[in-house]
Image 1 (cartoon, rainbow, N blue to C red):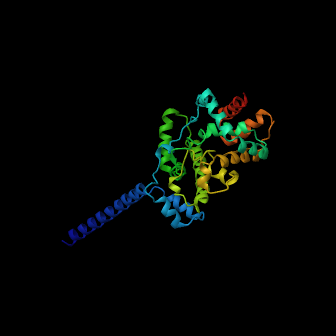
Image 2: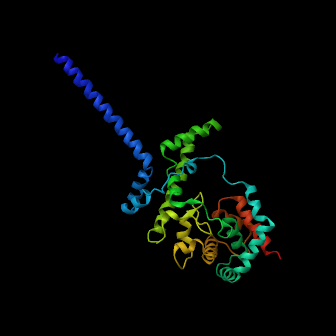
Image 3: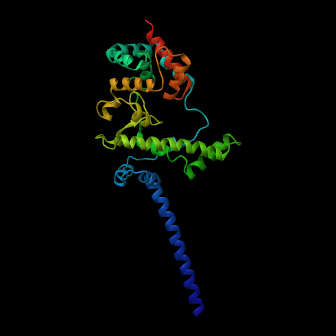
Amino acid sequence: MKKQIRNRQIRFLILTLLIFFFSVISTGASDETSFPFQALMQRLAQDGFDSEFLSNLLMDPRMELNLSLMILSLESRERADFYAQFLSPEAILLSKQFLRQNLKILRKAENRFYVEKEVMVAILLVESRFGQNIGKYRLIPTLASIALVDSPDHLQKNYEILQDKDPDLSYEWLEGLAKRRANRAYHELKCFLHIIRYEKIDPLEIYGSYAGALGMAQFIPSSYLSYALNQESFEKWLLSEEAAIFSIGNYLKSHGWRKGSPIEKKKKILWYYNRSKPYGETILQVAQKIEQR
C-alpha cells in the first residue's frame, strides 16, 4: 500500500515537472512572438541607451517584425533595366524644371563644394524623384528586423530555402552574410536612435527605404550624422530641397569629388553613395542630358 502511494507521488511529481517545463517553453515562445525585439532591446541597453526610452519605442504596437526584410537572397535586388526610367524624356524634363526652380541654391552649392549642379539634381531624381518617393517603410522596425536576420531560427530558415536552389551553399558562408547584414542594420539603428533622441517628431512615423535610407537625399542614418548639412530640425531636413542639395554636395566633396575629375573617379565616389554600378553610370548620363540645351 505504501509502495503504491509512493509510486503515485512520484508520478504526480513527474507530471507536475512536465507541466511546468512545457508551460515555461510555451511562455517563452509567447513572449518571443509578442515581443520579438527583446534581445535587441537588451543589446541597445548595454550600448548605453536608456531602458525607458527603448521600452517606449520598441514595445509600441507599431513595432512589427518585417519578415519580408529578413529573407536572404543570393541575387541583387537591383537590376540594370530599373534605371532606364530616369533617362526618359519626361524624367529629364522634370530634372531641368527642378534645376531652374532651384538654380540659386544649386549654384551656391556648386561653388561651395565644387560639385556640378547637374550631378546633384541627377542624384535627387534617382534617389527620391525630388521628394516624391522617400520610402514606405517605418524606419525603426525596418532596421530592427534586419538586425535580427542572423538569429539562429531565421538563419536556419533562410539556409533551408536557399539550399534548395543551391545545394552547394555553405551554411558558414550564409551565416557570415547574415551577420554582416545584421551588424550594418544594428549600426544604422543606433545612429538613428542618436538622431531622434531629442527630436520632437514621432520616431515611429519616420519612413524610409527598405535599406533604411531617409529623406530627399536618401541618406542612411550614419551618412546623415557625418555629412548632412541641416540648419533646422531633422524633420525639416527630410523634405528640404536646400538641405538635400547641400548635404549631397558635402557628401561628394568629402569623398573626393571635384569638378573635372576623371569619369572613373566619379563613378567610384557614386558607388559609395549607392553601391551599384548601374546607379553611378545613370547619374552621370542624367547629368549630361540635363546639361544639354
